[in-house]
Image (cartoon, rainbow, N blue to C red; front, side, top):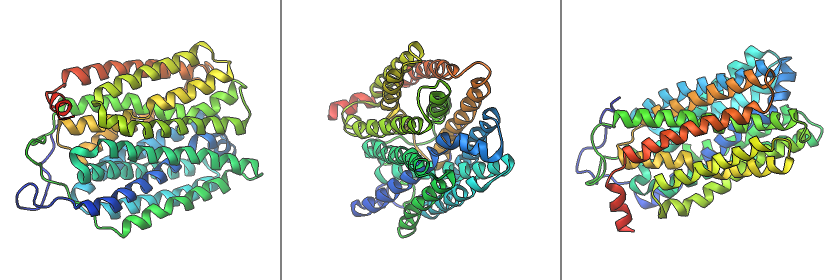
Length: 409
């Protein structure tokens, strides 16, 4: 897989740098967009039983929504990656947010599973384009110093994902149903779109001396795509199924299960905040190794003590903390190794969306036939395989750039 050279203004490599004063409003806009992305992304799991009731579907059938959303996400990632290389990015991101808000408003009104599936598919398409845009434009703005800002971007995604189940739970406690929750979330998506429309879009920078140049490393792209397939599948699956898992094992009520979902995203958010200073101090591969040790330990506890509510809470929070910096750190590692364009970022998100489409669907097919405990077993095996790919990624593609970075520190 190769990447075409990015179109950039003529002149020396650093003739058109992004001004420091222009970085701040743009970064704020990307962070606001990722709060919106988190609000939408974390809404499906806690509302899955309510959506099944509205459409008179079983859980095995309604789990197809995960596949539809991820299929849309995959298409949105591919299309978005090419759009951001060719046209100003801020209008594309704002349009994605507005489309997300429209589909969030429509979803609880659907009485047919097919209509609901179409709305969720379009929602996923907008999410994929928005996700690629935020990550790509942030790299273009901050370049070699993107590591802490990348963790900050995904920290704000976590804020949205943490608040989403809380809003849903409060709607349930107030005697409302998912309609009120979805419409509230739809309104909360809008500020990020209006902010971005006010700002001029950054352009793809030419490489500076000492930065990666030329074509992307095809083998490295494929490996990162496979790695993100496994990781994103686990993150989406746990966030989407922990609610149904806790209810099916009779560990908690519906409302407490929604809070458990929120705890996962809250731990993910806190972990990304903690990862910002760590990303400045440690190379990405060491952060990823620590992350996976924490993930496997947390899932191991959930496998060994499935009927303990305390262990479920601790395992959920531990998994959220451990997963927190995996995705942004992987993108930072990729930026250290090769040029990052919208097209390359799009391929990364194709892998992530394919994982988010496959693994939650697989769990849905086995959840009722084998039992809820199959959820944690599948997630453990998935992340074990991802850890194996991480070993190859960290050591086969290790470069002297780390020694240079550590020497500078």
